[in-house]
Image (cartoon, rainbow, N blue to C red; front, side, top):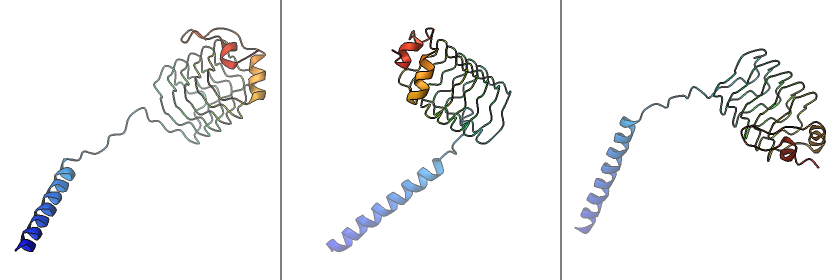
Length: 170
């Protein structure tokens, strides 16, 4: 008699779990893509105007972005790995937490940019304007850091941190 009751309880438990599973599946809603999740991997967006846009988390990996205007944009946690930002306008941008490994930033305008915690290893900054840029906690190659210190000046208007201090210049 006890065995029958036990089997009955197990059967009720299985039915309850099945009904709960069906209810969850019927109530499920499709995921909606967020507009700001942008992926420009391996594309050419040179001379395009992205000024004052919210591009948080956008992916520009291996993209050609020569003379592209990103001024005033939010590029927090964006990915630019192996990208070409030659002569791009990144002034007044938030690049905090961005991944900019092996990026060409020659001649780029990084004036007043916030680059807190940005990874910029093996990147090139020849002729880049870094006046007022905040590189606090950014990861840079020692050689590039030394070259940036030679021309670092100004104070970031958002964070109040001097460019020389953010680079750890002596």
